[in-house]
Image (cartoon, rainbow, N blue to C red; front, side, top):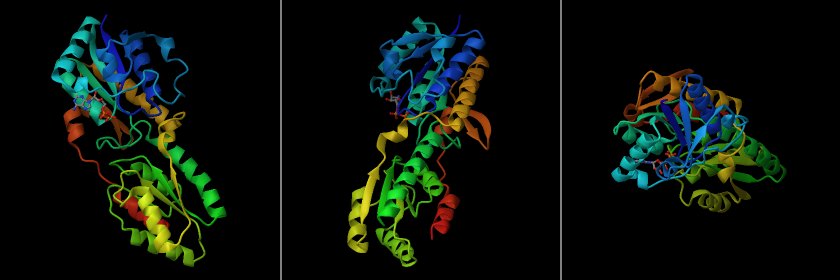
Length: 322
Ligand code: ADP
């Protein structure tokens, strides 16, 4: 019987389990054997394989993290490492591999496909930093986690007339900061894609303070181009505005938690689609969602696309926070 392997790789994201469930159940439905490969490409090279059945993915659709675990693996970046991986997969009769992860993991999948393994990538990352898809699995849940935190911070910020800087994940992509900032009613949103001077932030604080609003929420992406990061901004605001500024770094809480309904449904659709593509004999593809439709495209094409920043939303956020 032909077998399909599945692994999760790179940073984990809520909804990865729902995707694993969809892949395993769809593959078994169509008569395939499925191996779960633990700890991403590391586990592939270490032969950490578990045969999956219908019940091994029971009771996981609502769980954050990934039951298959994830890791980073430098050995897989070498040609020898990948040749070894192909040999191991052949020994298990695995012709196809579903990889759930981000762009690094997709590059690995692409290189594996060039060695004859059929591969399909499913986007799993809270960063939403893949250009070819409107959403990645985990982004919606992370955004909701941030909004929840902003709500709580807003309460205490308002009680004490404080300025609160909320640092969220996003080294190169400001989607999490932008979307959560809009939904959380942040006064200022600072993203890696757009430069903003501290003077601008100060003058905005002064304007809102003049009309009686003493508290303020600044959502800052971790990769934002601001001198000294959150601490640098706090110091600048303290000096220039004499504001009482606090910093909340949300950190890894953003990566955990039960996936939202949106992420569970997206993950289910993408997992199902990935197996259908393999059954059609397709390889070196990634699946995603564009204009509310499930799509698939060549990995190279997907990775060469440049992520577009949502300038309209960014401008709108400025208008709504005057
Ligand atoms: P993400 O998939 O979230 O972008 P990483 O960039 O850390 O996360 O990639 C996860 C893993 O994918 C790496 O540890 C490595 O095993 C594999 N990988 C990443 N980049 C490459 C590459 N250029 N060639 C081969 N494998 C890669």
